[in-house]
Image 1 (cartoon, rainbow, N blue to C red):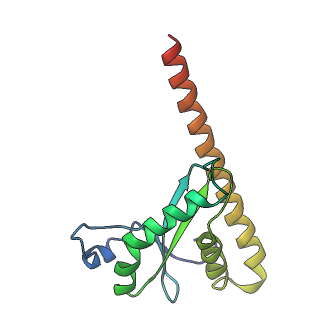
Image 2: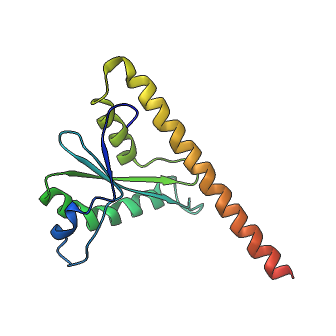
Length: 143
């Protein structure tokens, strides 16, 4: 909202378009033309696979879940998936570039930098939670 892009968190509008009867809800709808609708996830990096492997799997899962319903509702769905290693699925950069086109031109570099900073902070928070959970589990098993 800071850059003038209105958002709708967990939009219910698309719920009736899900074919499986579940009232699905993506995470965020950006009120631009066309509406950009995203579902966000941070997934663990799999050391046995190349960077992006788990992000791609999660993105495919999200596309199957939300794409048709969002299209039917007149929006464009883009999965926004990041791995704990910092790998950002190409959909995430698509969203950032797509939203940047709706920002006043001189503000675009600041907009992109602010979004990337927010992503980095979110990733660090998620990593801290994972370390705390692993530490707590280790302490509990040692007692």
